[in-house]
Length: 313
Image (tube, rainbow, N blue to C red; front, side, top):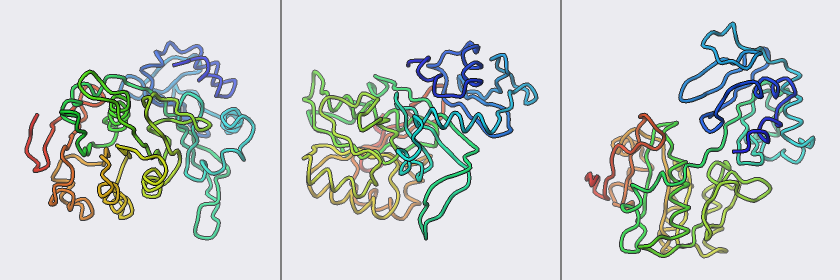
């Protein structure tokens, strides 16, 4: 990660504080700025307030209080003085910058009929740093790819346990291929720019040499677009759940593509309780279920199950 490049995204005062801070940016997950509230960071799996001297503290009163004008200055740097260029992304509540870092925004929502027309009076920023963990899928890869066959795979995970990070590395390795299997053409529908972290259409994360990405595209629409235009052998999506997603996945399966997907949940039983997803279990559509847990590190695997829900690892 280019620490200096990241720091220059912020207002001058926040830059100064982050420059003083003795932080390993590879261990830094989030920087939260709220108007008239103390600055917070999520660092090494714990939350800290940041003082004006760049020190970390557990005490709220020590935190540097961010001024509204600093948020506006930061937004100017983030958008390269062209908020209009990010208008469509901002309607979704975020924008993605060089390096794949994703900036969540909140403030006053402007409605355009029944749709969100934009965000103004931005008063809250959540800078989520992009960290690619190459090799984090090494242990599960033999269960997902076997004898050159890619199994339909669903990653089940509570929030914050690394499902997108794990999916990203699976995509990279399947795309590149390995000593035991050839590389496959992978199509990625990256609805919220979290998998590839694309900036100006180019993924900032390494998704492999045979991967095509549809950025900021609804999953259901994107899956069909990829099938029609890019002839993927494997399609990957993050956080499935609504009816349109389910229908699109069925279409992918009917076209002979392999599917890699993720969903929020704590167990296979959780999936059984969701009417739209229960059908995948009863009809044994997914051949592998990877269950993650919140342990000492991102991507900790609690169990791997086959299409019948039987534990195989």
